[in-house]
Figure (cartoon, rainbow, N blue to C red):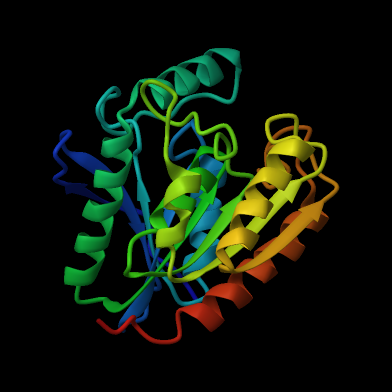
Length: 251
């Protein structure tokens, strides 16, 4: 399907306005919404290309600027050491409650849109993989795809580096698709096993994929990009959303 250029909307949150970029099919209709959480660099060109690809399969994709408290609207951090340092600084200065408030704002905005059919999923990469994991704790979110989510095992997301994501995993009612790179130094084997053990303990509905890839192997810029893996796992993602977002959740 042909998709629109990203359209910016300003969402109100308790921590200030949050610019959110929306991509959807050009064709009129009502579509499932996918909350798409970026890496620490915000809405970069690779993130926009991924959003367009997802939207082109029949989804309304919402990309929030997660560092809206700290950076002017429209800020994109570079894929270099300075950008990485700045992104990681904000990752650990942002209040955990603000991350969750952002998700609530996205859900409420999606549900009031005339082009949303009421079904909601989440997708995230790196920092975003952790945020899509937390989004799964919201009752409206029917399926979450988490690409190599950082800080989950360590419980270190947000100000104070003390999150409750693994504890709150018991609140997840939808399905998870968890994807990891075995050569990713940010989520080593012991961290992956800790997360897996918790999901097994809770008997959650999930799929688990570990592939031979480094951190950021999905990003179509840089030396770590693996196009073959990316194509394979985007197909897994689209199949997952097609199955989990067939109908809106019923209250």
